[in-house]
Image (tube, rainbow, N blue to C red; front, top):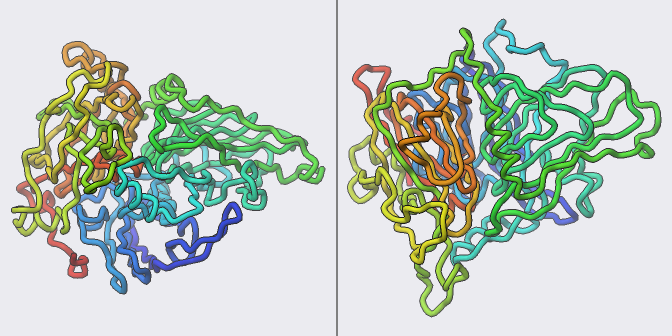
Length: 547
Ligand code: C2O
């Protein structure tokens, strides 16, 4: 591979959407941010220079970061944030991955405007496992807020209530023609007839899983989270925040005298301040259409209802690894450690004196894994670990299974309180892990897109109701399960994943709905060094930011 250099200047820029102008934090003044294009095997040196008042940190979402844990990016986990006037060079090599990923800020809610695609091409002279597309187009979904997202989340955390929802979903930063005052801010994809386009779909939205479809066109899914999958056709797909999906779009043989909309809107099963019902749309326009595009009939795709869990589940069950000689599925077979984690919402005590919080019964809304709502430390976990200074920073007594609430899908319990702490789960190098994640319906069943840093995992099973350790593992798929970095834990159900802990460092795992992360739905795995030199975390780079 080659070494590629990028500079990310973090600066403010005035941007107008929906007739509201606001100053947003950007990379190089661009919104969405710049594309990173590299090949498998390349090394990236990305210098991030902070010219704004906010503390900044950037995460390269889905990049394995083998032996480069210092470049992963989550603030207070692998690094202290980059302070005003400071810079940091993220230095990592892309190993064993090709497809689409993305980068985003990983501090507070700054990823609402700080995000952009990472496009990983195969090594030189290695073809795709499908016919070479005529053109490749990144499509990145996001959310636009008319007001300042930092103010929205800090107010929500203070009052204990749900944060304001966004004012629009966006395609490549544009809300599109179905919103008021937005017709000119519509993404347009000009296409030629009878060609195949590779759409690189990325869900960078803060708080919503999205259904996506293009009117009168079928999509062929070929890749998920930068891993090839067995191709399958679908009219509609689901993409959660943190997921990326490559699809082939075959255009029609003749230029139709029509305009086709592509559209996305949320999948959501509970209403705790996470979604609205609006739709972002872009236009698929055939270049050679003779009539002026103004007078063409417009076809809109039909998307499933907001709470269509059966569509969501059926869709995720259609994803399988290629599991071919060239692209094998290395599913861990012999399991060293089994874990059972509950994920879901709950409440915590209102800490405002003489004030009532807006959560149920005057509490604060909160979220947890195994009843632990995670609190970020004031320094970075990875530094504390590397320098042997964990005392007072984090604890290693992370629970293997939940401490309370044992009927996850039945009636909500009386006590909805979660505990809290900065706890990590320690794993020896090369531990093979099976993790069952169970949704809880304490404050309503909900699908949670869980993202694991530093690893891909195989999704070996999923189901509804309470996971049954005696029965359910019998039907696990250990042959060709899909491999990814973000999985929707089904609403009112469970999912089982397997991964090999072959990457030393501290790796965050969290719900990629930003509001749930803010409420504490996160934890960290601490993977110890192995014995060989290439199994150890190297020392930190000299410019690693200080807290
Ligand atoms: Cu894309 Cu920890 O996140």
